[in-house]
Image (cartoon, rainbow over all chains, first blue to last red):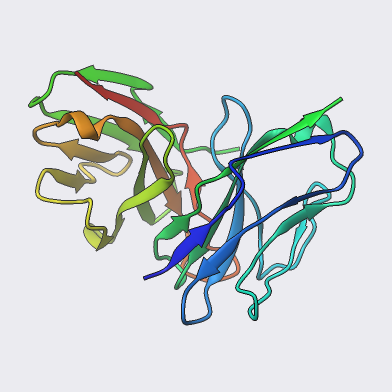
Length: 109
Length: 116
């Protein structure tokens, strides 16, 4: 069975500092990986997916199949990045999302 | 921009009562999902629904749960006899395509269910 692990429940950085939110997964095949974000009092929304290889709001994430990781990075954090971030995995298109526990990111002024 | 909506935002019920959580997916979407998040825990998949039938369900989705698309717009989750451990935030999601590059699940704001 697939599993997603986010080792940090809480992460606090200062504005302008680099930030990395860790995500590791276990699955024997080739899954799709996603990062979802939930800002305060808002709904879960897709931030980015590995297959698109894009940068959204300055965030990037690279799928490392050797380390089974999909860490989310941003070189210069902003206060508006403060939110809950969830890493998620999907085995096939249209199938369930398997979420990690989430990391609460706080960017301090 | 179209959004998934859910009602009610908060539902309080007594243990053993039936509850129906309602969702209105985005109008041209064909794939529907329910997830739940118990306080302090991860978001967990419950069930997916396509073409008027369940396409996948988790071990959580036992006989107490059922889903229905009673008309062209609503997608409901029914819990037949609620238990204390059913207290959670329930999220509905929908997507419009099976194509890999565009298949994004859009989430509703959630319904907080409290079972007393």
